[in-house]
Length: 626
Image (cartoon, rainbow, N blue to C red; front, side, top):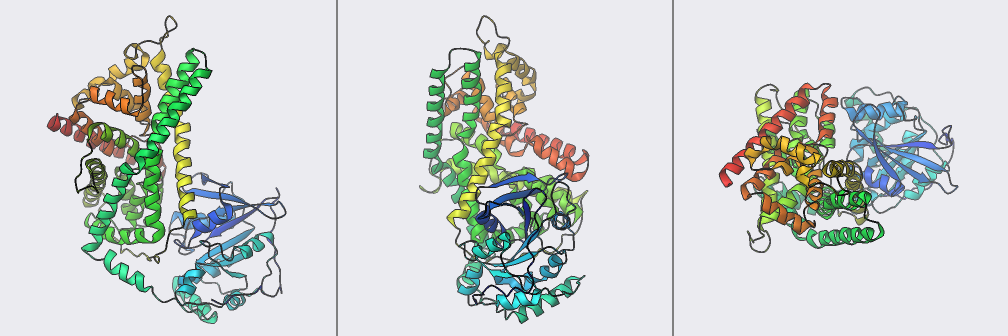
């Protein structure tokens, strides 16, 4: 690629300051152009995630401090393929650039990020973005990949053609970022402004993009030889699914093997810190609350953080390497078998992290009936909140034995089976919906496969840090409040300076009232309390059981497992696993579905359906396994 000098300044337009002294700069571009890497490169740890006012789509805002001490707010907009708003993401992008989104000032500048290896396809966004009249910098990302594969582009010529500065960069390696900073500082000179045509159709945009690429001497990179060889294997109709299955099995085996020493370390840290705290506090109600309620309840959940991070580490590697997009192509065949289009795979995939963003991601599905079916079945796939519950019960009731030699054990097999059961239930439910009340024809699936790349430690670190913050935030809010309330209920009536036995407390009375409902599943009143508290968040049941058994035993992870073994039969434990595999048990998801569907009809039906499926599966497991 030609190394471009700073264009001669025939007209300089500096981004305007906002009234409060902080400028807002929007980062936009198509999906899979490295926007997250670019955003993380500029903002580092100075970023926060929130929802756009009035809707459930997430926004990321980061801050960047210039050399003079001035702060710039960077908004990472959703990826768009055009400015013909058919999806919520495209509408959000247009509203933000127009200044029509409540609570967000109109950006004083725009950074348009394009993939230089697919420049001709992405250039069609340029006229529409420049039409907003906001000072714009075009960044040709992945320039290192373009050069390595024999491609080239004259960035100077492209800048002259479109009338705004163009920077060749590699966010992954940090190349070209100094010129991005110059733009943010208002010191990057710009070429003479030119009048671009007003384009109102996709064919016209594509024709203009072809002409602009030709004027810039764009030479597309050669397809990667290794990429073509890998695709022949990964996308093979037989080998592809088998490799995908092998990858999934390896991930779940690592969750149990690699996480064990890390979990032991976290558990030891919780125990040592709790003991140290206990020596500082005098015997009182407050000491019991802090040690048994807060430290015992929250600590019982935090110990599972290593397993969750290992899961997301593997997901990050698969996504950043480009393999996950190939998995979507493989899964498209399964999606069509149950009546869904290929776009439904992305929301279902994201639901393995959390059903809330999965329901939001269903907005990318254009067919309204397919969208409803997708958001209905998304909570059935196994989210990360189920993992602590699975890990506790599997460790307590499934002895570790080799299944496929030393590589795969029984615990990883059971965990994989639970994930497979959730996915099978989602597919079966989708088929049922698409065969009855949501019948429609599936749309063709089109997905641009990104090139294979080596994941970077920086990108993976930010991903894991983000997941850890989300998990710990839940532990410090929802789980903390739930365990405190539970401890209070388990400690009253407080008589003679001593808390009552757990069975004689208010919490015990509530559990015994609910016990007849769970008794057919082989469960007792203690688990019944956990099923109610876990409606706030699934993993809360671990803290609930830790809090309850702390009243009766010296609770740590092995002893909690021993307490469960003494209380539950093998069949009841497997039934409890099945219950959590299928039950909604997440009020946040219920609220999001209500907002996305505009009423209570669909979330009520969804909650009732999943509850019936969960209860029925747990009942069958208990009756057959005893």
